[in-house]
Image (cartoon, rainbow, N blue to C red; front, side, top):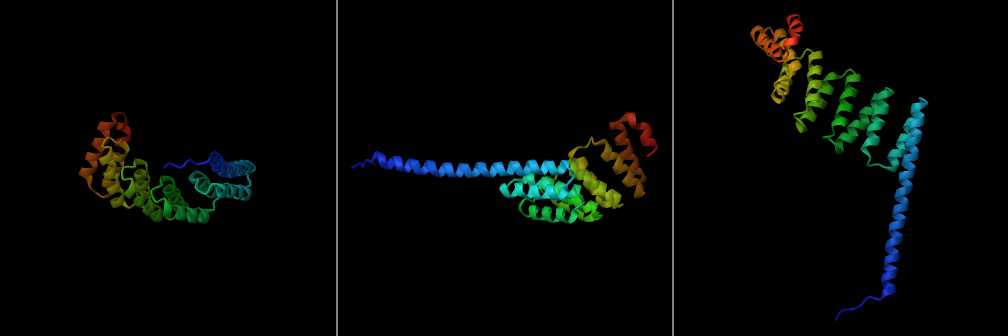
Length: 211
């Protein structure tokens, strides 16, 4: 036998559900409004060159929306702009525990280490990120530049080979490879790399002759 639910009962249930939704939406909009207001004051503080107030308002915005990666990345950028490298490092490390594959967090941490004159730590961060995204040409290029600055020819060459495997027509990569081979006294291999670069960009012949 089918039992019919009285209409007044259904109405009460509907009202309860609607009230619940209204309360939650009101809270949601209130938090969103607080976040928007805090972010607005953060922008004002930045414009007025007041880093302390900028940080405080940005943290208030994050408190209203703790899941916002955009706001957290903005906070790291603020720390970097103001030279607060330790704060930036601490926040990056904390966020990378939950988001190890996030490209920007890895780049931020690498930048922190570069600014702290710890290039090998920066290289380690980029190497770890490349385990997740091995074909990121920009990250590979940054890593190669770090190794070149450190005169770590072997590490630079290893990553150049990876870069050329992704794009064998990368003119700059062939130039760097040739220069590294020249540093390693591998004259014939260096010439081959220079010729490859020349074939890719004949208009740069004068530059290559001076390399």
